[in-house]
Amino acid sequence: MSADKLVEGVLKGKRRSLARLISMIENEDPSADEALSTLYKHTGKAHVIGVTGPPGSGKSTIVARMTAELRRRVRTIGIVCVDPSSPFSGGALLGDRIRMQEHTLDSEVFVRSMGTRGHLGGLARATSDAVRAIDAFGKDIVIVETVGAGQSEVEVVELAHTVIVTDVPGSGDDIQAIKAGIMEIADIFVVNKSDLDGADKKVTEINAMLDIAPNMEDWRPPVLLTNANSGEGIPELVDKIEEHMKYLHESGTLETRGLKRSREELEKLMEYKLTRELLTKLQGTREYDEAIKKIAERKDDPYTVAERLIAEFLVKHRE
Ligand SMILES: Nc1nc2c(ncn2[C@@H]2O[C@H](COP(=O)(O)OP(=O)(O)OP(=O)(O)O)[C@@H](O)[C@H]2O)c(=O)[nH]1
Ligand SMILES: [Mg+2]
Image (tube, rainbow, N blue to C red):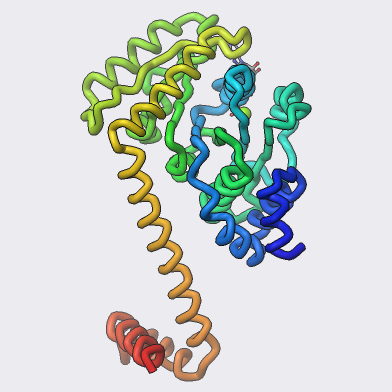
């Protein structure tokens, strides 16, 4: 399908077009970039919520409950489940599918899972593009669920306006989430499974950590208790999410972060495109192979050669 047709479908609210576009994003189809480029001016409206935390801490259950609560407040929702360990994509993961069943019948909720298909590095970008597509599609809120397993979730979560970090009672004294460097990115902490022993203790522990953490902004992350199975605490969580968004607006943080993100995105893209262009010109040429050989033989050094090749490239482009 042409990028134009796809864009038209997405803007008209056709779910099939959106699903198709996200598949193309995952497959790194060049038409996806073309479509996203046209869609860009229709984005920036959705409130993006990241949900991360240790495996099994109840993220998906919380997301399903949050979705129900948000629907009650007449919001439209997109959900992206990111599972870096899963080779599957294109549909919901089995567990999530069952949990999301009530929502899949609701046309105001769009659910999508993303697996890695072997290119972990591209996952953050693919997710960010998928979120952008859903934003252009017109959803008020996009929720990104990702399992807290290290670097990948930090990257994925960076695209969110509001980051929720989940934990459960008795998950070790070390507080896993905090160990993973997630402390700084959390806007709201949720201690889920409040029906289990030790929930209050966990809340106290996290609050104690927050007391000694250097606070960069005026927002102190609240620590909430939920029971996602029963839904207890979920309306309060949604209240806090809305409060955080209000804070982002009023403090000007939203604007600052938006600028920072646009700069980073532009620079990453330029870096990528420049490098690709430079290498396409060089790779496979005899001069390039010889330059590499000389570096290996210590007849030349990579520092000088890199500078020379870049200078030559730039001069050629000026002509
Ligand atoms: N007791 C109790 N169990 C819960 C609660 N919330 C979720 N669970 C259960 O915890 C298990 C894991 O829940 P999920 O929602 O799949 O957790 P998750 O964090 O999305 O898991 P992954 O995506 O696999 O990392 C399920 O069996 C849930 O029914 C809760 O508040 N209390
Ligand atoms: Mg899950």
